[in-house]
Image 1 (cartoon, one colour):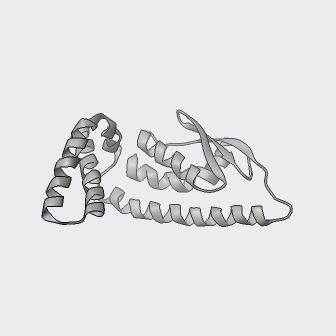
Image 2: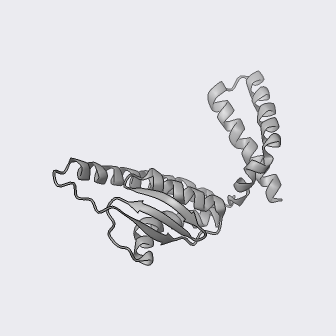
Length: 164
C-alpha cells in the first residue's frame, strides 16, 4: 500500500510541476500526465520516501503551518547573521553541537536537516541515527538537550505530525 501511495504522490508532484510550467491546454495536460506516469514508473523506487508522508487532515493542515514557521525562522536568522556580520566586533562563537531528533521517518529527518541547513547561521554537518551534528554560528550551549530545544524543537513538533 505504501508503494502505491508513494508512486501516486510522485506522479502527482511531477504532473503539478508540468502544469505549472506548461499550462492547462488539453493536449499539454494529456502529454504531462503520460510523461509523469512514465517517469514515476521508471523511478518508482526513488519515490518510496514519499510513502512516509501522512495524508490525514491534521498533517495536511500542518504543512502550511510548517512552511510559515520555516519562513519566519529564515527571516529571523537572516537578520541575526546580517547583524553579526555588520557588527565591528563580529560577535560569533562557532562550534559543532550534537542534537537529538524524535523523528522516525527518513523523509522527516531529511527535511529537518535541510530546514536547519537552509536557515542562516546553522548547517547540518552529519546525521547518525537519531543524532544530527550541526555547525552553529553562535554556540549558546553544548548540552544535547539544550541544543535540541534551541535548534530542532520548533521544526520537529510540526514534522512529527506530518511524517511521524
